[in-house]
Amino acid sequence: MNSTGDDEFDADDLDPDAVLWVRGVNYLAGWRDASQALTELTDALTAAGINTSDAQLRANASADGSGVLRVELAPETAREIAMLARVAAARWRRTG
View (cartoon, rainbow, N blue to C red):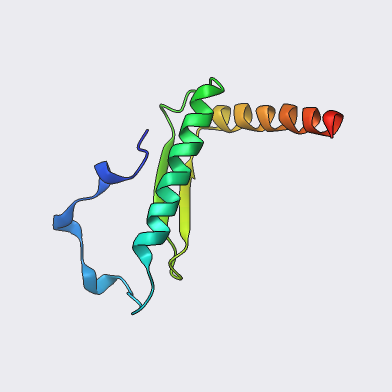
């Protein structure tokens, strides 16, 4: 798993002219927020016993500077997460 995308970053491949940068947009803050959320998500999935070794998780910033997570999962991993979400939702409904 790649939690921040750093392993895929290669400065030699960076073409600043290929990216539209908008003056005044704080892309770093959005990326930082996404990176922190990604750490929280990864920690929660690990604590729940979800194997994320095959997952590709990356923090990014959108065109408006807001944070975005890019998540690629194997179907079986997505099904495990969906099952955990359904169980949690059922518990919340009973206690709420």
